[in-house]
Length: 414
Image 1 (cartoon, rainbow, N blue to C red):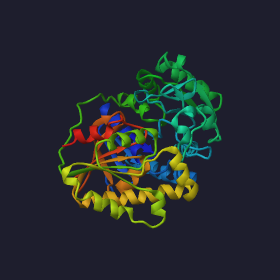
Image 2 (tube, one colour):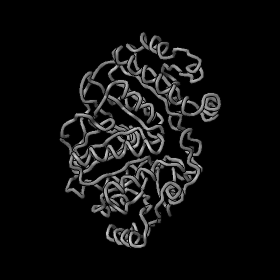
Image 3 (cartoon, helix red, strand yellow):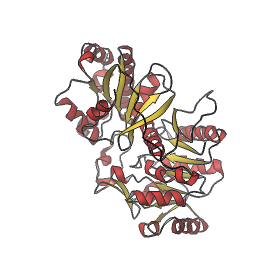
Image 4 (cartoon, rainbow, N blue to C red):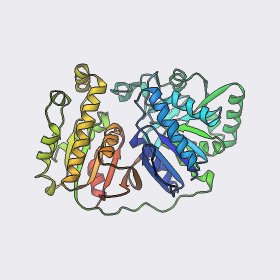
């Protein structure tokens, strides 16, 4: 193995696995730190954790366990992958995890770059933009678990780490890999541990990948991965196959992002849907059983949607009653039970929206590893669990995908 990746949620892991595979690396994604899994035959392995919103100490422990396993597999470089919107709070978890990984690896310097220009996430003068909006002015400011209200990444990371953070700005990036390596050297010598690196286009990330060839640890969004395979002499291969799996199809959406709301609304114009209400779940209503009873007679005619996706005002109302953590857990557990029941009813193609929801679903289905298939939209591929039953899973970060993503995904998969 050349590269080991530690991702802080499931859909983020799938995102970076797709990026690496598209760049030519044979890539496997594992769910959690494997127990008893032998040597993996791949150029890169991505370990999908559920650490983004866990308590910082738990996130650190999970990440260190993943690091230990990847190093035993022979990984020569480690990428700590987080969201392209730098999802975290002032308590962590990006800073604490990165600090712990650096310490465990005996390293003293790394970069931080969440940019993903294809999905309109760019970093300029150390500020993160979502499209033309600063992160702090984007819908991420209302994220139910990690509201992002500061676009200055040096400030955000500086509140999470005990180490010094500075910037490598776009003029230096545009001078190429050698100029960036010199900037890294100067920052390290002046006592800095982290460099926020500007990137507004793919060529910036390709140059950054080359500049980081000798760093033991990198941190960033999936975009940073596009420049890494070339450091190991690997070039882009052919397109991934789309194996037929047959069976029924369904969509589960637990994300409450603005994009997931738009995707659910688009589906509901012409296709059947069933809403999961967290307040009813808290009152003991068995909505999983109700959803499965509703879906059963419809599956033979086409795909169905089961969703808990809601607008920010509705989310705040639920959280004021239940608390953010309990509301999220109730929805995840319900959708996970529904996913298991749908597979028992013959569903073999399943689209899931939301990182936390995707994690709950793969755990309920007993999925331990995924092979990466064809791209649906930037950052989201079809994936194929290793083992039985034969399934196709599209695991989507809440913010990713076009408005017609659900239809597009199911239209690709036979």
